[in-house]
Image 1 (cartoon, rainbow, N blue to C red):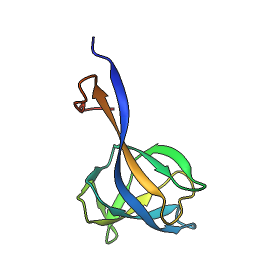
Image 2 (image 1 turned 90 degrees about the vertical axis):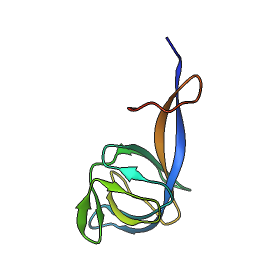
Image 3 (image 1 turned 30 degrees about the vertical axis):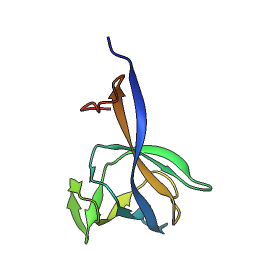
Image 4 (image 1 turned 180 degrees about the horizontal axis):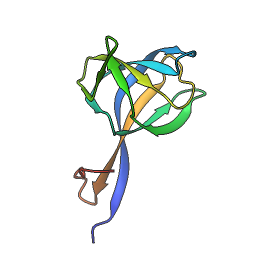
Length: 100
């Protein structure tokens, strides 16, 4: 059986955080889907979560492409300039797997 590893692929940067909503504004540099497992990290932020809800222009979406500005429901306080990484499971050859 092939060994599996987890790698992080940067998918965006936090541009704003609305404390009263628990929502981070994120500029995407790579596609992101509801259900993806992400890691948000910065100087004082460091948490993982599944993408459960994201919006573009106040409309719920299941997928957003690179270049989009999204609102992302987050589990913890995010800060401007925090980096958003998608966790990707790979096999020993480095090929991505379908599910994490």
